Amino acid sequence: MSKLNVVMAQVNPLVGDIPGNVQLIIDRVQQAEAEYSPDVVVFPELVMTGYPPEDLLLRPSIEQRINQGIQRLKQVVGDTYVVIGYPRLDNGKLYNMAGVLYRGEIIAEYAKQHLPNYRVFDEKRYFVPGSSTAVVDIKGIKVALSICEDIWFPGPMQLAKEAGAELMINLNASPFHTEKLRERKQQLKARAEQGDMPIIYVNQIGGQDELVFDGYSVAVGRDGNIRVSAPQYQESLQLVRVNLAIAEGVEEEEIMPPLALLPSVYQALVLGVRDYVNKNRFRGVVLGLSGGIDSALTLAVAVDALGSERVEAVMMPFRYTSQMSEDDAAQQAAML
Image 1 (tube, one colour):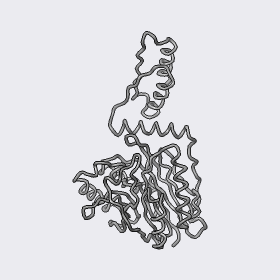
Image 2 (tube, rainbow, N blue to C red):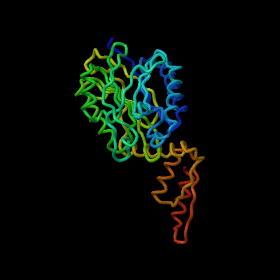
Image 3 (tube, one colour):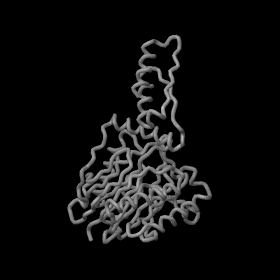
Image 4 (tube, rainbow, N blue to C red):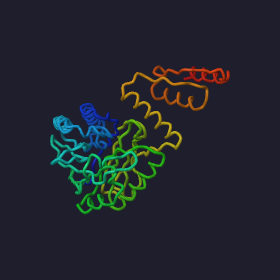
């Protein structure tokens, strides 16, 4: 068989809420099965814990909680192959793992080989790198697994190619910055051309403290060009039709163009504020409104993120405050 229907499950997990994230996985698998009848459903990196879990990984209870979550998934995963990310403790060493569940069992596991340890990343504090590839036969197609940073280096793709892989699935928790989408495209093109195989790249969305994950999960063909894309800044299920009999290995769907720079930055701000407030279970926000540009933008972001009923604007004029500033602030509050 040279065809697979793969659903990219672009989701927004909550860091530390393992039971909730497991239920999220179950709900999205069932939704995908009802809407697309997929062969495979793929979730982002460390979806069971949310990303980045940071020092939660140091708690002694993490192994038990992950095992309980996997057992729950084993009870409900049937004839659909489900690819998830989770931390795995093995002989005292913790790995950033991707696993394939099928008919109640984990049939393949892969440990992330390249652990980022710069800027916002500190994975070497928690994880030990893997060193071997994982290639699993899914309905006659040899599928390799990799995780996020692995796609930025030639080694994991080379090992997968030597093991006979025909398709690579890459799980991600890749945060937004203004040049990130261009960099991802460059790396995906280089790896696809190197391996002469399509790549399915599944990224999470959502805000976690200072990080924002923008989604835009994609499938690229053998030439590295995008053939399928998911939307930015929203949860989605996106079908990818893998067809190794055609030149690029992936049937092309309508590609959603990424947002331009300013709309993209604005949506990142809105998503970051929304998730920071909601995931910390704050009732709303209070902000100072001066009548100037900075606080006007802050008010617009807050209202778009939370709704006007959860935003309280306060004007605190001083004796040097102009009447124009007071009038502008009042007008902004009335508009929003």
